[in-house]
Length: 171
Image (tube, rainbow, N blue to C red; front, side, top):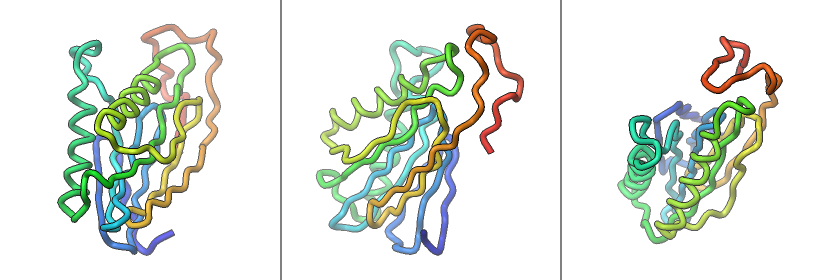
């Protein structure tokens, strides 16, 4: 796609105004927000592991808010104007059926946050059961998503709080 690839992982973000840069990440229940400002031709992507803090899961969205504000500020620092930001949102899968709804929680938080901040969501691929690889061009807003089907364990073999012990491979 581009001459220079920036790979981000959980909890990271990257922003660029270089037309030769692409940003990429791999998602399961995590969510990535791709923001860009079309007039300034600048953008970035984050990889949100958890939108809620584990110590207060019903009350505290600080982890998600921090991830979003960090990305917005990085794009603005490169010349983007907040009122012209556009977003594409990816991820939020339920990777282990019957075990957790963290993907749904992450997706709901992200969509609600963007709506409250009046950032228009122009594309999304959320939910489901498969991992996603996202490649984003921060200067054009173009995003390419590839779903990565993995073999899921049967629901009947899982109990809440029980891990799979390496049975799920994402690469």
